[in-house]
Image (cartoon, rainbow, N blue to C red):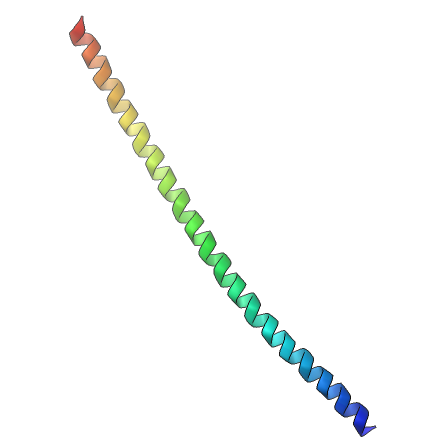
Length: 73
């Protein structure tokens, strides 16, 4: 009976060790995913800012073209 108990305990210890390893791996994956999400958010923010600036520059160019057309007449 003692031999069976030792075998069960060995298996349980092995399972616990594997769970600890998997838990550590999962934590690293979550950290990496979080970093990727952060970078994507930064890229989206930057892209939105650039689109706003591009729209502002387009409106300025349109005003300049309108003024030049008025002076050409």
